[in-house]
Length: 317
Length: 287
Image (cartoon, rainbow over all chains, first blue to last red; front, side):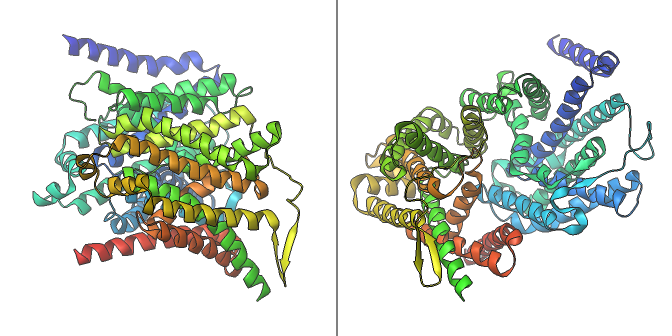
């Protein structure tokens, strides 16, 4: 009975989300908030595969997203490739780089791994900052196209971006949900709980951690591609450590032990924070991040399993 | 040769700050096994405290040092006791990590709301005095700050080595359960430790104010470098942190002299990753 109500609620919410652009099309700002929320939620879910499910806390996910965005943009702008061809290239390049770097770094555990992700992200940002071909600190712009063009992935109509972002988020959620219940998911969760036990029962920690980081980075690359195509401009600041932190916060607030955690946290927090930034940004800059931090601290202090921990008794601390 | 010597002196001076920051981080990391991600932000708070003391109360930054240290110590101890200690029980490294991250965001943006993001400086009567030793020139505040840094570092090393509280801190860092068994109040030690780390960060910040711009994100450069110092210098080793800090400062200035200032951060961070990975490989092979 309870489950039935929940399903009806979810379907109602999904339908509401789908027809929403019809009503707010005249308010591009609100549409933008939603698009941003979907994008952040996607990134947060990507993080959660590595951080929440595998227990490898990365503070470098903005860099994975950045590598994806930069590869795609370079392919489009400098090599004149079609965006649809650039996307797989971006995914491949991001996955390849992270696999090569992190297969070496995964012998580091706990805090040390976190430090490596930070250093890696900053190092990549510095490379881009010093690389003439990638536009240095000025960044790269994608060409604007008239009207809606699916082939060139450029739309005048923001609602289309809304639907694409929404579809991306739902698709990534479906993938994460599938992984969560698959053999891979159980292996990852075993590694999170105890690496040595995992190794003892025949789960190779290194292999599975690399798989996790490759999937996570690939999803980030897709999100990065979307980011580049949506804003039509990228610069090295998208890879700042603070962006990486902002990606993680929805997952922690929502509940990193749950697949739905980033979804709840992302939608709630990003819309709230964007609303605050819009309303009070002129008088009190940074007020949205203060609220973010306070919510984060309160949630961690009183409900270590995140907002979803309120509804789940098995919630893991 | 002159530029080389000058770069060395500059590296030494900035390295002193990395050392002191690293020592504070080292004590915290050693005792509680958590990365304190708001260490750089605590340095920034120390800067603003010194700024407020100087601008509104007219206290010279060097005189205000004990005051800044005291305020930071109390604030750090309260933060530790009310927020970190309860979360320590859950043994969730992720939550502890992001608790300090959240605190860092709160401090940075709080400072932005209170003081706006303008760049501020403190100008004292002696801040423009330049000392010259042959071809090398150094501003007087830098030299004084460096001497204070060294003094504080030595005092910290003695405190940890010879005082009763220092011995307790080291005991908890080696084995918290064993320490509890012999009657050490670990929660109190956690408070003292975190307060100590905050005070050290605050002192570093106050010392920086005389020749560095004060703004809400001033600490972010130092925060991560403090972590590098801890990891490279070795956990629980005060002298290790000291030399690692100096080494990092020298490396940065020498890289910017010989390779180029824009590649400084890249080289430092890449070196850090390589050192970490190689060292872990050596540890694993030995085991």
